[in-house]
Every structure is written in structure tokens, then in C-alpha cells.
Amino acid sequence: MGRAVALACAWADGGVPPATIVQELADALASLDDATLAPDAPVLLARYRQQFTELEAAARAAFSTSPACAGSAFHSAAPDPLPFVLYRLPGILHAAGLYPPAELEALAGKASPTWLARLALRHLAALALAAGAVADLHARRLPPAAFPARVTDLVRSVTAIESAAPRPSSPEVNTP
Image (tube, helix red, strand yellow):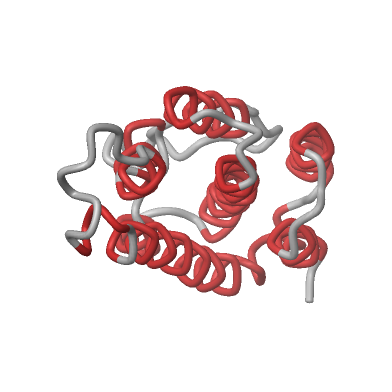
């Protein structure tokens, strides 16, 4: 297992502070070379698909099991907004700049494995940060109204980190 995969696994396990994730990502993108990253691309893409799917399923489950969805509190004067903002999580992630897994995988035939590995590593860091925001939301440390902006800011903070490697020149692949 390469260093990039090890970082992604550590982030997924949780408990890593957001500032540490951002710094580790920046260090990794600056220091990992093509020979190190290229073999990790398929593993990073698979981990991204798995983690995205799990986060999306957890968000949908939170909504479907909420009293509002079950009908027991649908007519309440003050329904809990938490399940509603969680339901929107995949859309928030996409709007903030994360590709759905299928789009990343579609790039596999058009982009270099190194570029894909770097992009997948950014996306995995963003998912780890989003999962932290979900945990803060559940623990009531983050109000539901602030959740979309917090996730957007966290995702953009890692997708904006540049690497030393050149980007592909193809317009359909050269995206943020």
C-alpha cells in the first residue's frame, strides 16, 4: 500500500482534525512523485467510490428513518431540519466541486493515472472532512443551517490545493 492510500485510510478512520487533513494533503501532493502515485490510482478510485457510497447511504438513511419521513412528526410545527440537510449532502458535495464516483472513473481512460490519483486523493480528503461535519451535525456542535456552507468551505479548501504535477491539457479532463 502506497503512502497516498495509507493517508486516505487514516482519514477515513476518523478522528483526524481538519487542519491536519489539509496539511497532510498539501504535503502529499507536493512530495509524491509519479512513480509512487500511478500504482495507487485504482485503489484510490475504489476507496473513493466506497466512501462516497457509504456517506451517501448514511445521509439517505438518516432521512428515511427520521420522524418527518415516517409520518409521525410530519405535521409538527417545528420538524427537525437535520435529516433534510443530510439528505442534501450528495448535492452539496457535487456543488462544492466533488465528482460523483462514476465521473471520476470515466476519466480513467482519458487522464494519466498520476493525475487521477491526485484528484482521488483530494476527493478522499474532502469526504473525510465532510464526514467530520456530519459528525458535528449529529453531535449538535454544528447547526443544520450552517451545515451546507461548512461542507462547501471544507470541500473547496482541499480541492483548491495545487500539486507540483502538471495538469492534463485535454479540455474535457482539465477541470478543477
